[in-house]
Length: 148
Ligand code: RTP
Ligand code: MG
Image 1 (tube, protein in one colour):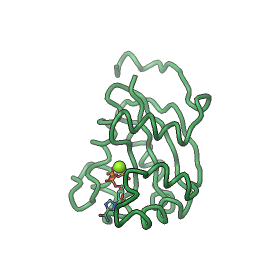
Image 2 (cartoon, helix red, strand yellow):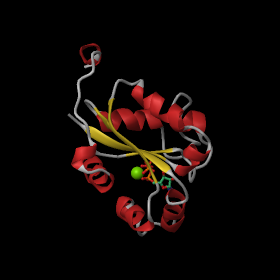
Image 3 (tube, helix red, strand yellow):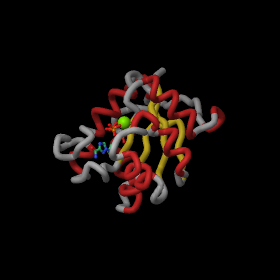
Image 4 (cartoon, helix red, strand yellow):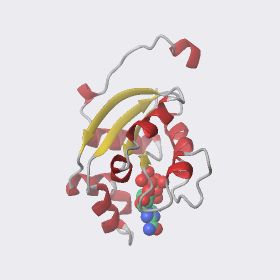
């Protein structure tokens, strides 16, 4: 079963949008298997965003993601990565459609509310940065037969 990492970014925590963001993903039917409130340190931010290390926006991105508490979550289900990416909307809120999290809740590229892994390989790497195996739960839901 595919898993993906979601980060409710510091802007969304400050704006009181934790429940809204998690609820929108929960409603898709994906199963929440790990969840915690945390503050990302600079070293961990560098590791997480290593693909962007040479981009001009890298320092700003690290400053932002370490600027306050975040909520870290792992969701599981078929095509979890693509389902979350669709629910998030495009990276730049100018392009993310209404109905998507960013389309409805964000107006700034640098303050775009949510991170979601961009491939199953990225997801495995990112989940292992933030969660130990014992923090990821395996459980059945009574509704699983109606979703899967
Ligand atoms: P994320 O990693 O945060 O889920 O976002 P994403 O996949 O949609 O976008 P990505 O290309 O991975 O970029 C990571 C974050 O960097 C900021 N960004 N700024 N100034 C710029 O040109 C620029 N480009 C990207 C965004 O906040 C984006 O979410
Ligand atoms: Mg990305």
